[in-house]
Structures are given as structure tokens and as C-alpha cells.
Amino acid sequence: MLHGCALPAITPDSAMPPENSADASLPAAKITITRDSPDDVQTRQIEIYLDGQHKGELLFGDALTFPVAPGRHTLRVDNTWNHKDLELDVSAGNDLRFLTKSKAGQLSRFLLIAFGAGPIHVSIEPAPPRAAS
Image (cartoon, rainbow, N blue to C red):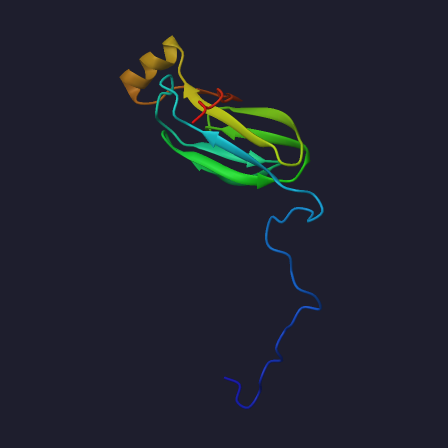
């Protein structure tokens, strides 16, 4: 054990930007992904990635919203059986909404019922427009 020895305080030369901060000169856009389709098999989580960075996971009924800087991006959904990538060109101020789901084919449905597991395909598509309020 060291006695009488103090470590110097570490202070950065400049303030550190907040995590995931975008260029302050460009207004941020946002992406919302929802998982609530009646066609969804409602099993397994769907992992969400933007440009390879994990943003979260969705169980059935969940939604995830996160900011994104303007520019070209790759949005990936992955249910650990397979994944889909969507290339996006995001403009400042965009409010992009998507629907993701895991869906089983006929053979997969049989395997899910018989064995509790089977290949489930994941998809992502633009969400239908919201009704005006």
C-alpha cells in the first residue's frame, strides 16, 4: 500500500464532446424502428446496428429511436439467424421510420412448433405513414 503518495488529477485539454455527437453545424435527423407487425413470429430479439455500431435490440412490441447525422449510412437488422442491410441517404431534419419483423416460412413454422426453433427470416421496410392527428 502506498502512503503519502497522491496521483495527479487528470484533466482534458478541452471539453470532450458527448458520446455519439454529430457535427454541430448540421441539424440531426432521427431513425425510429418499430417491431409490432402481426406477421412477426414474436420470438427472438432483433439487434439494430447503424454503420456497424450497436444501437439496441427489439423484442416484439418494442420501438427504438436514435439520432443520426446527415449522410450515407448502413442500417442493419439481425435476428441471429440472418440479417438485412438497408443503405440510407439521410438529410438534415429527416424523421425516418421503419418496420422490422422476424417471419417464418412454412417449414420454419413446423420446426418452431415441433422443436421450438427454426430458421426465421428478418426484414426491414419503410413504415406506413402515420395517420394525421
